[in-house]
Amino acid sequence: MEDKAREIIEITKAQGVQFIDLQFTDIFGTTKSVTIPSDGLEEALDRGIWFDGSSIQGFARIQESDMFLQPDPVTYRILPWTGNGDQSALRARIICDVHNPDGSPFEGDPRYALKRAMANAAELGVVYNTGPELEFFLFRSDGNGTAPVPHDVGGYFDFSPGDEAQRVRSDIVEALQALRIHVEMSHHEVAVGQHEIDFRYANALHSADNSITFKYAVKGVAAKHNLFATFMPKPVFGINGSGMHVHQSLIDPNGKNVFYDSAGEFMLSKMARHFVAGQLVHARAMAAVVAPTVNSYKRLTPGYEAPVYVCWAQRNRSALIRVPRYSPGREQSTRVELRFPDPSCNPYLAFAVMLEAGLDGIKRELEPPPSVSDDVFHWTPEEREANGVDVLPGTLEEALNELAHDEIARCALGEHIYRAYDRAKRAEWDEYRIHVSEWEKARYLRTL
Image (cartoon, rainbow, N blue to C red):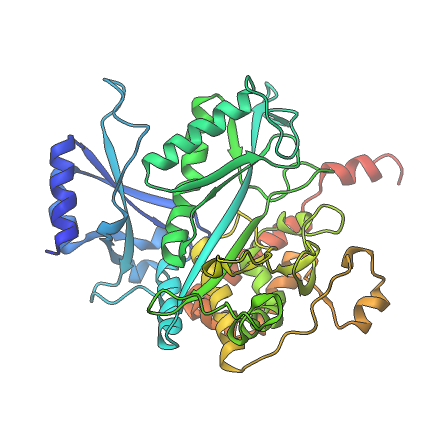
């Protein structure tokens, strides 16, 4: 048994942890968990835990259901909201990789899809780093469980010492820090009831693990305040939705940021430009994975800060990819920001597709089009066409059709995940398409 595994066994005993939640995600990013008593941890680390994968969305058919979870000891964390007196037993969690009965990685495991993409990057001598910024809303119930009521009336960066929203965010930050997620800042976002908490940049696998943990920690703390948190991209009509902007860079084996070049435009290296070009080329197909719900495309509309035009720039926030301004002496911070993902995505699959798109640009030495300094929201369709600026898909169905014809994006998912994902998402679209909404009834019922 490796040293890290032995270390967490000793920590479990020393701190009196009674239960271990072994966690993984389905293809949509929903956290799944099986709980074992702490005295079963050593065997789980040594041999894994068998489970039936046929009931997990996108995993296996009934006749192929046997698979096992292999805990990754590096992800061991004690859950800070447990062990409060006699109310609950102290618990820890470990994120797991999913394996086939023969011990091989399971092709339908989203975490494995990202590992596979990062291995491809390693063949080029680089490590993919990401820094996702997950926005979310805090709501009260209106009493009958229907319409969400924003938790506050604040705006961007608003602060009041007695503000209850500030206290909730502080409790969330404390929980995240206890989970060893290094929080860099937290603040109120643009819309009422909307918030953002940013954590430290790291390699993409670690960032994806943190993103999954972040989401259920936020929901858990909100529930303790009699609120509910949602990462739905567009929960309220007429105000900004929630995005998951992702900062990205590539690092060489010596830890040097290969995106930096003092002679390049915006201080970007040729490799960085190729990476940007690859993501722009595959952006329309990537949309099906990084903006994966029917509701995502109600956020991706002009006028609410969400980018919909396939272009890149430095200060222009209407662009799909933004290059944050370079600060002298901070070459390691040179990065590009992809702005159209939203927090409803599975971060493992989103990062895998984003990385493979960028790597395709590097391998083919693609050049991005000229950067755009104008606010593209105000361009006419003719101006966009003249400048070669494409538009993201307007619906989930359109995005799925783009994904179906993009070999790079499909290969990033792997054929197993792609088939299951496409089938489930087309069913989601079809259910939405035939649903008769309240808007339709209000609009047509008495007038037609």
